[in-house]
Length: 338
Figure 1 (cartoon, helix red, strand yellow):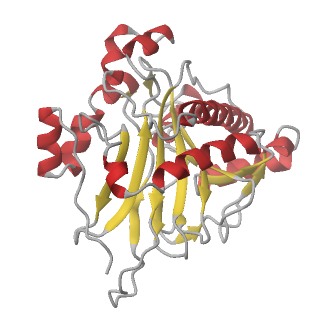
Figure 2 (spheres, helix red, strand yellow):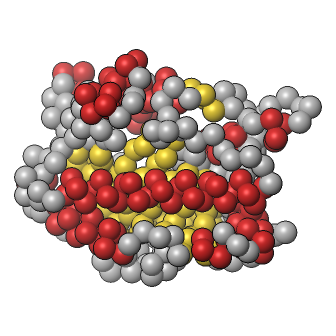
């Protein structure tokens, strides 16, 4: 079965529980695009709205106040940060949360001792918004539940045993805030990219997007791009590279990007779901048969331990790397719009 890739498929999770046709649509979307929108997902609207309002108030603060919410140790996945493009123009603000506030909390949740250093850098919980922590936790837990449900449906759609999403899952949690682009048109036909093309390094990523335009785009198999429209009540679910690994390439990773547009700031909040730290992801026998696997084993915990250093080697600006090495805050300089 193929699916119409003129739009991103909207999958009714309640129907997929009982409908062979809806499962077939899910399988086709996973094989061809790796991106779906889901409705009847079971996440209460209040959970989404409470978190959105709380984090929205933080992101609406004056920049001088937000700068104080940057990671005190320049950790790129904790607290608030901003990044400019090559011309110094603000492309994105981000607020990131670690899964656990500290190593003790991680140990209490069952994380093995050799991985506790992943959580040695503190989350930043703004005093201006004391309810943010509880709202973020409720949002996170609900989205992990959606990931488990969708992954179970993918297994049913493919006719295989449940995927080994061992618990406690390792997760990361990021809010992306894309400014309204007010700079002059550069005079090219290319769309201004606020987030470059990539696929997530997860099993599944679950997110909610807000805005007044379809800035999020998914890549079709032919390399062209399809918008992911704002569908009221829907969540977006991307297949990550680890799901592609498990299925030996059967399920496509959801390659995506974000383009500028609209008249209001666009925002998304995503939970990236991986198997537990200590897991090794590799192609499952049901997808390999007698052939050699197409993907190498992926050690979740070892990768998480080196993620910051590898990120900074590839993307870090010299002053950012220096701040990280010194354990000092880092805030990128940006040009103010005219």
